[in-house]
Image (tube, rainbow, N blue to C red; front, side):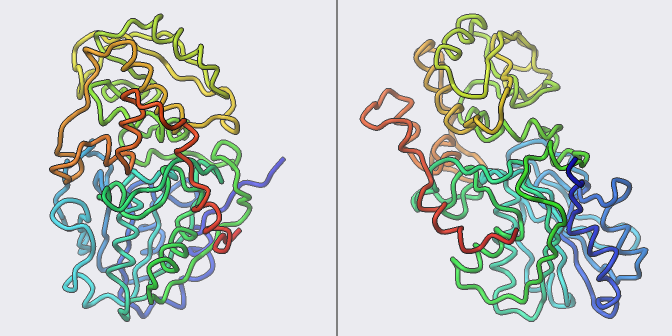
Length: 382
């Protein structure tokens, strides 16, 4: 049996805190930044005697109580520590936030998906620290999707807060590795110290022997992260991605969809590692709130063989084919982009939308990331 993975935060708490006791420290964390399956990293570091002056937190709030898309959190103060949101009014620490800080410690469990805005928050943090005296420690955590890489990279005309750099939807890196990649690509000068994990070999989350703590309201299980990079595309449509149910992103549908018909059509595609079960549901909030929706429950049978992004694109194409008069693209704004269609921002290109709209001049295999896969071979840590 494999040994369980030990997070960078746990190694830091046990071995490295003494040398930083003289510094004024800020954290970039949230409620899911747990250590030893019993407490938040903030409490661990305070007990070790570190001087925590500020806590920055990303989208969904420190307590991860905020839902999707442009629902902002207020700053607050607790026990003499300032808690500062990096989503909404500002997206990175300003000069005034950094002037009394010697060190920032980053400890966020990400989901391995480019559109999940923790990636953008990390990127903007690096840009804010470029050529500054403030040091950065990255407490590494596993990518729940392991080394899986899939999807087209973001094209320059479609950069946004959910696509801040030309990386694919599924990028196969841990936070520390992503930092190495961004620093190299952007020529950044930052005093950064990665604290590596122990016993992580690139395995999917289910194989590392650790508990999953929800990273936001709609990623309640590690299995949610497996399908999320595909069904998140539905955020750019009038199809429910399952918000307002107990299985967001695993359940999809709309009132005009016939569950059996959609299930049959999707299963005919014979996509590897996944089955589509007829499923009706009534969302309690978000799209189609209070209305009975027909749809499917997406069951992953083999994540190693499963292609989430390809599956998401083909779900869109199938629903549009079956219901051409009912299927709709949603209009802006979406994650602070007020002009471009949300689907184009989500996919980082207008080519996916055109493919779904029956442009068969290119195959589904176009949406790949071979160049990115070559680029990252030099920066992996494990």
